[in-house]
Image 1 (spheres, rainbow, N blue to C red):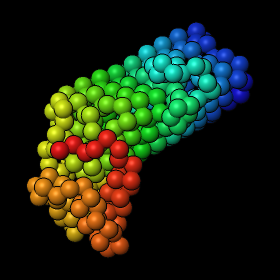
Image 2 (cartoon, one colour):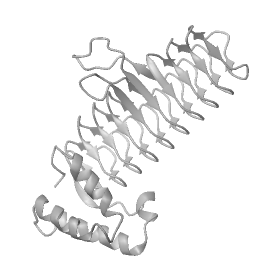
Image 3 (tube, rainbow, N blue to C red):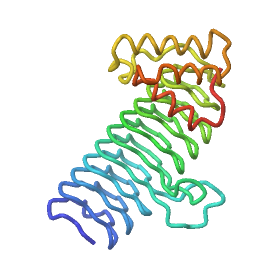
Length: 263
């Protein structure tokens, strides 16, 4: 066990031998932190939370009360292999968050980046990959193997089907069910989700210059209003790639997309 003398652990919490707690970590009342967990400096864990498995958490994260982090996943093929959860820095988790460890059939890890905000009751399934600066609303869930690229937003009470991918700057409207991949900067909603326009309020979109923003609108036209095939859209991307950095987001999206895109 390696616990910084500057860490604070409630007297009625259980911290097993082998846990690493950095400086200024705060563990609230009635928590259980299992052997193999590493928690970085300044992270706060709310009351009645359980952090288990081979879970590594970075610095200055917050976990609301009754959270369950690093627990056994719900994949029936999982047989106790030493898979992991890895969480970056400055993430906010609301109450009742659940994050499951990976599987050897997937990445062997569930990966979460930096500066994300997850509200109450959010579930992140096994082998998910969440980028930076994303947001997930109350009582929404990502099934196994889902990917959220940087700046993606998921509303409240949404369900994202396993193996789906949400591109950078995507916005999923409240109470939506997503069963196919959503290209960068697309706003989608409904059950099953369909395109609803451009997520122009996305921080990723707002960070771009007007020329690249106009290009995103043009790409939306090609996807959804010109009846072009995906292969035709990909060919047009190649022509533009060297002139507009944002095209790289579309290239990376299509290189990974396997479920087809929302139409």
